[in-house]
Image 1: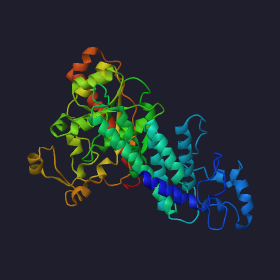
Image 2 (image 1 turned 135 degrees about the vertical axis):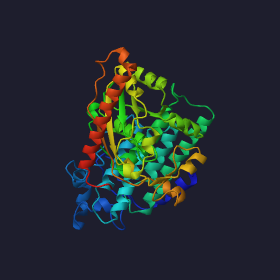
Image 3 (image 1 turned 90 degrees about the vertical axis):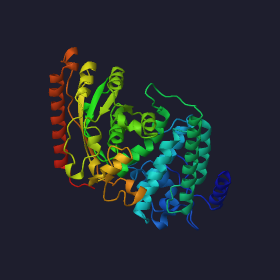
Image 4 (image 1 turned 30 degrees about the horizontal axis):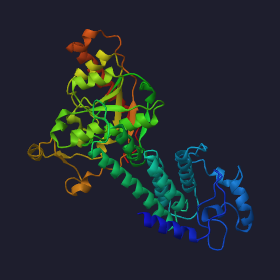
Length: 436
């Protein structure tokens, strides 16, 4: 890999660089067009006969380069501290992303968006690297990555940096296999949670184009019980709820989802879920998390919610048990209903092959339009458009301690929560303009 980096660096430096100055005060790293002083993007900022004015315009505060920064997906980078190399390189990568996303010249729009996403992924992964690895990544980026996404060298440079970041991830996994890591009392590895954030954010913002409303109903501190509908064969909804609170809440928090204990029968599944912050759905675990002041997400439909047929989508199944609301009463935590729309279209389940499920010791075996007919490709979720609605909290502070075990009170409170959640779902579905 080092040899490839050196070769690319040498080839890139053979051609003269663009003489423009970017907003951050750094020289542009693009290669100049043949026989010209500037690259494709900066040459387009002025008329062909005004080449001498381009450098002045690009460097000036009110230049056309500044106007292009107003893009919803890539806000301009804040000035980076001079003594913080991570902040400096992150700002430079973000600036490249801004230039690419706002470029309106010739070029494939899909390639431009893909280039912007690649740079965002690089930028988000930088903060998860060890100091030594970060210095190597900084060198690779500055030598080999420009904003000229139509140049093959751009894709070679991006590929090299991403490959190096993947190698760092592999090294981290190997260290974990040697036991060189720490987890909390429930098995969560905070470093790995941070590691998957770029992926979960990509699925949230880009793949499923998720919108969230009502996040102000989620407490900024202290315990709360998020009560959500379940659906879609695989528990992507859990990841999207957690991503919404972590990425969009005014006070980002980690959400601890409770997974069905039946998943413990699947080799490796329980360990993987716990590593990324989920916890087995037992009264002891739920009570302990709420006592610690954490956000706990439950899916009271249980596995039956995940495995309901497509014709029953967004119709709440019978709540598996009412004891979950008792946990909220015991902790004095509010219950926040969360309506998830979009999950049921990711894997439209047409039938359940129950004999196969029994043979494989699975709660259900889904038959969808793509699975199992296309093999592993059938597990690729469809890119439906998602929306999350966090409803007004149900206050539990007025209940006494005895109410936490009173079946009549639990049944009434669970019924209220179910009605509110179904009303939220119906409202979200009524506003939805399209599935995809």
